[in-house]
Length: 171
Image (tube, rainbow, N blue to C red):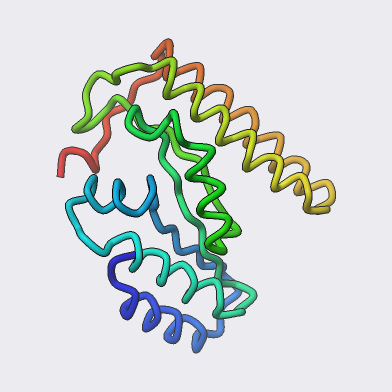
């Protein structure tokens, strides 16, 4: 979300392509503005990420979509519902829950129960929003798949059994 101008340029180039492929721009917002910017050590990042989201979502191109990924961590788990509702008030319509992983640079997770509980709460909120959409059989299958994945991930947070190396964390 930091490079709004580059994202807009990408959207303009993409709309000129004659493609049937969908493009989703995922923008990470993990907390309220002050905590997000402090956690990323980039003052102004939150505001720029919001601007990028709104630039993408206002493109009105049927094959271009913006998502906000909201990662539940030990630092934000207790206020995840408030963060979610704050993002919704700011016009964010598509929020994808992400669970912080123990792989990569983080190592062992602190307070796994609180993280898993925050993740489950965020999943409930996003599922409640998606259930308002009438999307037929394909939508129902997609929602069921998400619910199953969310259950597996929150359980694996507390009782890790399926660990895989995080290549991005080693860059």
